Image: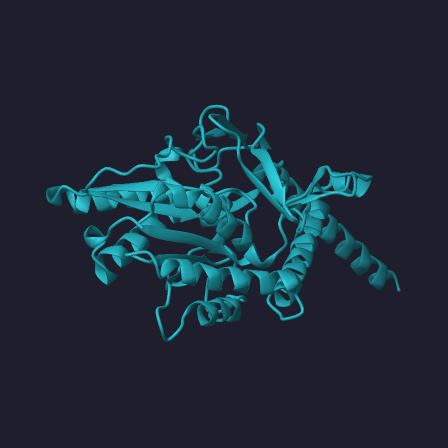
Length: 363
């Protein structure tokens, strides 16, 4: 019995010393990290509602400022900030024109925050990058390419189509590029409340929330265990969310399909047609990527025997990268400047190989 107690005491002391060393190591490495959500200046400007559809743009003629809690990649400025310059139309970039000089090929980009480029500098977003690549490639042919970025954070496909018909079409596009993200089959994030005010929906919890504040969480080891548990919960809820999003029972997926079909009809009148960039969820970008069936479903919806929209699935472009390497920030899973560069290169290659952009004319 005495020997048993001695062994038990020794085991307890060893365990305490081991846990103490782990705790000290976590303190020294300042782990685990709990990142604060970004702070931002006002971003959106509501325009009007058509039935249940809220039409809004970014703030007009503004520098929309995002400030992050840290700068792990050294990409932000000394305030950990990045700026998004908008024009008088309420979209990113210089002012748009409703006339077009001869020898100009105009590309209109539609989509949500991925297309807008949240967290990425003006010069690094893929609409700007592909414009530079095309102008460099066709420099000797006296052809000028212009990219008009109509991306707005939170837009779904139905809203992007509405924006195309009501506003973007007036800029005389030769090519339309829709940035499609997997949450496009969700309802719009803005809606009219019962009192007529504009409300905002929230679909998913933060990936890195603040840990509980009760006394056990003063220990780094306890915080680490809680963070691992929370990430497992996020993983489970994410899979459940997207497994129900792309079913016939979801009316918003039906609306998305209708919008894609209408977009195909519009693209038939364009000399250079349309391209859809399907962004994967920046999550588990390997052979076990859990949302491949959704990509296949979107491809089936877009392609047709008559005149398919050119669909570019970006999963092969990003596959093999560690997902966190592609994020703007550990607290913000929007694609960073490296993703935008890869997307621009892929779209550029498609444009110059599939068709000759210099042969287009305005609709």
